[in-house]
Image (tube, rainbow, N blue to C red; front, side):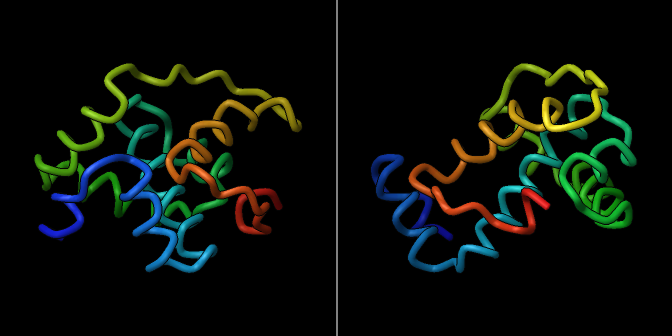
Length: 118
């Protein structure tokens, strides 16, 4: 992790993650980071589960980890200092802002995954 942390530039870090992680792993990592953002924004676990297609138990595990790990909380707050407002919507219009944020986490990842868009 120290080597990854010392890499210079966002494109280098993105390239490292794309090289080490399969597309499915990239999507799952993005979902878990996004779930962390939403937990910090006081979203309900069931809403997070529904929007990101994660199990409720995964969301609660991440919530518990955020309570225990101050470093992970600081990391997420540094990446996204503002809270994401909860605006419950149904249908395809509910997901695009979250999709955009997830795609920005892994710059250059353009393939659509059945895990994210099903």
